[in-house]
Amino acid sequence: MHILVLNSGSSSLKFQVIDIVITETGECQAHYLAKGLVESIGSNAQLTFTVSGKQKTRQNKPIKNHQIAIDTILQWLVSPQAEIDAIQSFDDIQAVGHRVVHGGERFAKSILIDQTVISGIEKCMELAPLHNPANLKGIEAITALLGSDIPQVAVFDTAFHATLSEAAYLYGLPYQFYRRYKIRRYGFHGNSHRYIAYKYRKIHNIPAKEVNIISLHLGNGCSACSIHAGKSIDTSMGFTPLDGLVMGTRSGDIDASILNYLHSKEGMDFAEIDNLLNKQSGLLGISGLTSDMREILDEANEHDDRRAKLAIEIFCRNIRKYIAAYFVEASGKVDAIVFTGGIGENSAQIREIICTQLIAIGLEFDPLANNQGLDNCEYRQISTPDSKLKAWVIPTNEEFIIAVDTIREVTLKKSACG
Ligand code: ADP
Image 1 (cartoon, protein in one colour):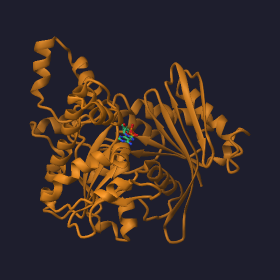
Image 2 (image 1 turned 30 degrees about the vertical axis):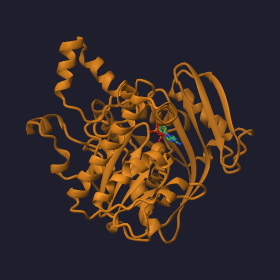
Image 3 (image 1 turned 135 degrees about the vertical axis):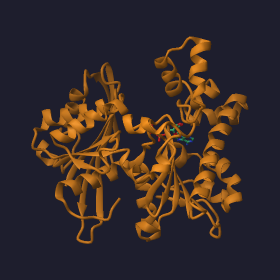
């Protein structure tokens, strides 16, 4: 089945076309046909398209809205210059899987989209005012362009964390605010953490219930997830993706009294403070330079920049604190920590700073393996073979999870993937 996977952001849109089948034994075999990105929707957009095994193509053109962006993608997919043998017309796209950021408590799993699901996603809008409206635009655009008969599936970023216990998801706030407004930890990056749990068990050839790991998704957004018996039991992002680890531009955990203090000192209103915490903090705010970890590392290594070094130290220290907390909460029943995301997959230096101090909880780091990076490997162990607590680097693949859930919901076939 050819599945179009869409990730619609407020002004950008990522897509992949995946040919996926569920085999007799319930395995999922995926072939990646094409992928791309449309950025700066609403103005002069940049489009990047890649057909598997071929050169990237880039172009710029004004794109007014999501529907025009998706139309442009669809036209490109069927165009002669794309040369995708399997996709000759729109009929060759048999289903669409959408990443939907917030499913609230309403959606604990992926679901075939109908009018009731759309109003459910709308009801979660208040919880993710930036993301869910963009996700809905993607769904509406597909209906408008491919008709209402094409099956569309919503795959939620929050769903993997639906297994958190009440003790893990409640904040220390008066209980009635949970009852009235559902203020609680939801957690995000669920499809990435779920993929890591899946890939880890495939690598080790173990059943899901034997997966006990701490997954670290370190990209522009960062989150940690404690996975026990294959299920998420705690995660660092909370009511919104602002909570938890220090990120590119997000502060992560802070004392909430700082909001009031900033208001009184700087006269900032809540919208300004929200913008400060989400867009001007984290690596960018501490370094005063950039949110990009590669550039921060360059500044620290080549120019000995004090604040770049500080940003790295705070970033890694915060991650170690979460690892230690999750290790203790799981009574030490953690077999491995797994690095993923742009920073986790690519920065040997950040992995080393985090791991060398984890000897206290049984991690014997292997600097040689770490420095080899992934090279041509799909994944790599970066702890010594005898280390009690192992460390791994495993590239994430959220699109695979979305494609798997889409084929499952559409065909109702059982599969143990993901
Ligand atoms: P997103 O969360 O938007 O998907 P990514 O997962 O692509 O982002 O991660 C982006 C982050 O990864 C940036 O901070 C970038 O600097 C960092 N990154 C990518 N490659 C490297 C590298 N080789 N060394 C250090 N950081 C890297």
